[in-house]
Length: 81
Image (cartoon, rainbow, N blue to C red):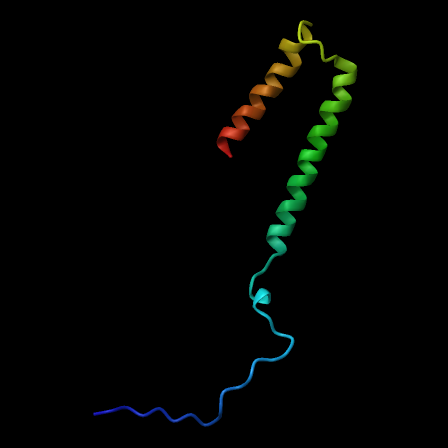
């Protein structure tokens, strides 16, 4: 026994303005990218400004108190991500 499907109308042609990329929502990716660029820019600017006031000499005692914990936090964050 065979089954016959009856179609009332012919298939519609695709509209001219409809493209495949519209099926992918890029807004969350763009928002994430803008957020990450903002965070990294802030982090870089903070280190640049704070480095001028705290000093960047690797033999200074402030390095152990200020920069090494920041370095360890960056390494831990990189390992988690």
